[in-house]
Length: 173
Image (cartoon, rainbow, N blue to C red; front, top):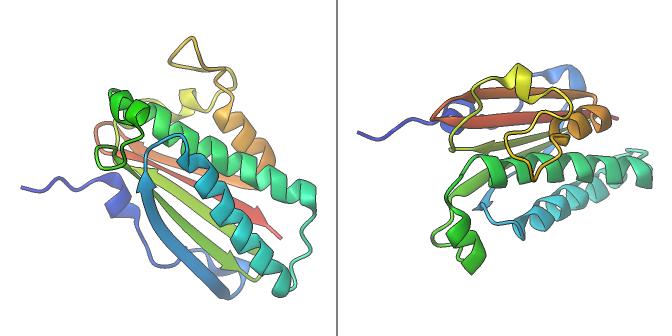
């Protein structure tokens, strides 16, 4: 029997909240849960935002950088925390052995929506995990969700232990 994960349950072709205007573009892609792919995620978001300039968005460089930091934190969290024990594949840089991170981007008339999801271990207590300085390891600062929340207009986190986590970031334009 195939396990249905949280990412599959929440996957949608369009983001359900249409208060942001008409959908103009969407991008869906998967990538190996390797640290070098954080840059890939940032680049994809930056490319979509650059396209948004053509759609009339007035985005400052600092706002773009803030979005890229929030996306980096979401993707880094998925890579580091969702798949403990996959460090061997990451050390080898072997994408064939690495689990996947899923990313969906939606460009609306008045908002950018980014959804980062994984099929990993999940978060037992989302509310606690979102507290500034909460961390499960000494080598981390526990500021990932704090950065996401400060740079984006809305952050939603859904998680089920053993099934994965879905982080949705919304930046209104």
